[in-house]
Length: 91
Image 1 (cartoon, rainbow, N blue to C red):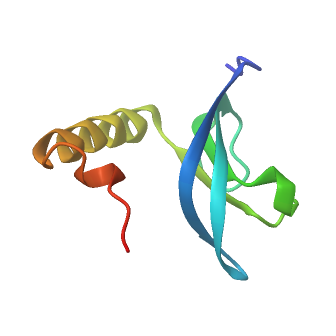
Image 2: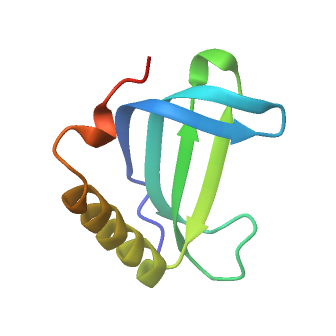
């Protein structure tokens, strides 16, 4: 069932699209019919930089189980890293 509710988050990072890497500034997360995945509904995440136009977007369509596994993997990876490592700036 589509909720038509979208959660957004401002973020900092990079994504790789058809034309190469670009800065990411926003993520949109919602449950809807997928465009490509062979399921009735998926959790969809669009990582984007709206100021760069529609081509600056990386989209994923995940099953509920895959989305929950991703959340757990992210939490585990961050909790196993030394404090501040994931946000450290390279010089």
